[in-house]
Image (cartoon, rainbow, N blue to C red; front, side):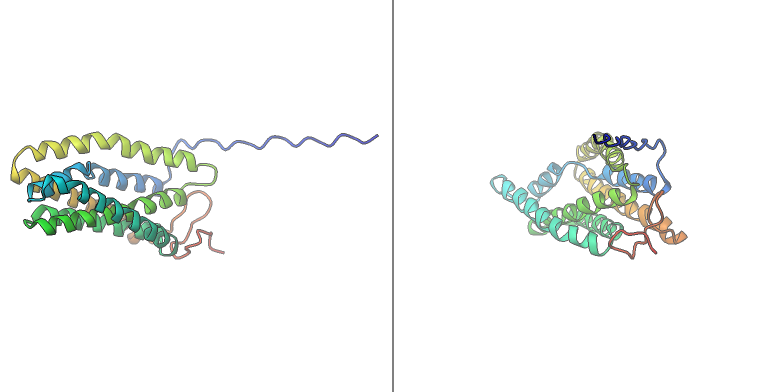
Length: 223
């Protein structure tokens, strides 16, 4: 007669953290600033239409932006792995700011179309880096909660971002310029809010389970 095998206790479930660590809060704050300016892409199509692109060609502009976004996302994902997601995200926000700044001041049709393509590239750079950084800053067992906070911030600010941009857009040509310029400014502020505190303090990335050096692309704690 064989003794029954001992039963292993069920694995303990990780508790849901009530408070976010400093760097998670900093990331969500920066994402919120950027999301407040990142209104619907439909405004971009209105802009190029106002500058002379025929309505029958608007779907092609949209297709071009989508292709630029897809191509950039593949390259940006690799960049976030080998460079660092924080740097990749900051670069994406700066490219986004430059594209919207160009749309705010340009008067030529082809320049506007080129800026819309650049917006697609920026979106492709931003999304992989954001998600990679959210995962990097969340402790083991809490990735789902971290992505929940990330989605909550973006979702809550989507409506006021659209309303603010739409209201400015209705104020005439100068309102359009201000709406686009506001997006550029908010993207730049988001980039600075993400990078300056960490650069100033020399703080390394990581929450709860040891600092993760931004020079270590494998996301492993330093030995």
